[in-house]
Length: 112
Length: 115
Image (spheres, each protein chain N blue to C red):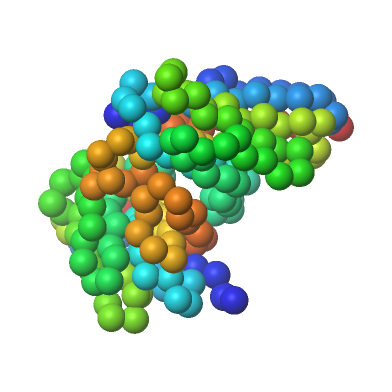
């Protein structure tokens, strides 16, 4: 079951904050976040595990709500370099054999 | 450390042909996963190999197959190509199997066009 990401796209001015959500209908074990710039490979941002702490580095952080099977990615004081498509990848509980299932992505455009 | 490499980078094939794509993981990584990326469906998991064994498989027809060699390099094969197979094929390597705690490092991809 593919996780649902929202919003599908967002346009911000440099310095503004953004929140990207990732929701699943199944119980999750882990959520992975990746960013992909046009014409490039996806780049790993962070992993959140069930029962784990909220993760973050620099001005990008994420949370994992186990009760709602939802993860949110927070981008604070966005920079031009944050532009790209953000994907969440989920692993369901007991679903290790299914691999990672990715959402369709959220397109983020940061304008100067 | 060198990153994940994929060859070829671009490929044009005719419907009905078969194709083999290659992926060399980061040195020391034992897991290789393959994904198909299209504008409509996004990133879809094909399969994962760990220590030469297919660990899991996505929901793709049997025309899609893969293998991993003892040096962790991996190949995927698509037989009887269809127009809908046109996509960017990404491979990703991980230190151990892709489950929970281990991040993946993606290669640049192979752009396959089927005419």
